[in-house]
Image (cartoon, rainbow, N blue to C red; front, side, top):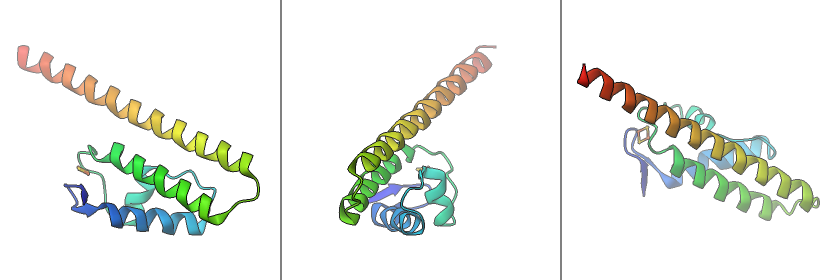
Length: 110
Ligand code: FES
């Protein structure tokens, strides 16, 4: 399934990029920008980022489950931090989008 229509990137390609990053460093906090850089792509409209975030979380959880890390507390804390960081990114993007829309309305009203 295509996740990013600007760059025509599928969910499979994103999963592969995330796995590559996790194999380099299983404890890396991966954000959409890292995934796009790994694929040598750039976010354009970035509307796909919330879906990319979900894929990162899903793949990271599966990766750590498969890895069978002995320290379950560390894994749970890591996944919690990852999700908190992703929520922060998604919220920041939403706020930027709202600010841009507000600015646009002011511009066309003037
Ligand atoms: S849909 Fe991914 S950058 Fe636009």
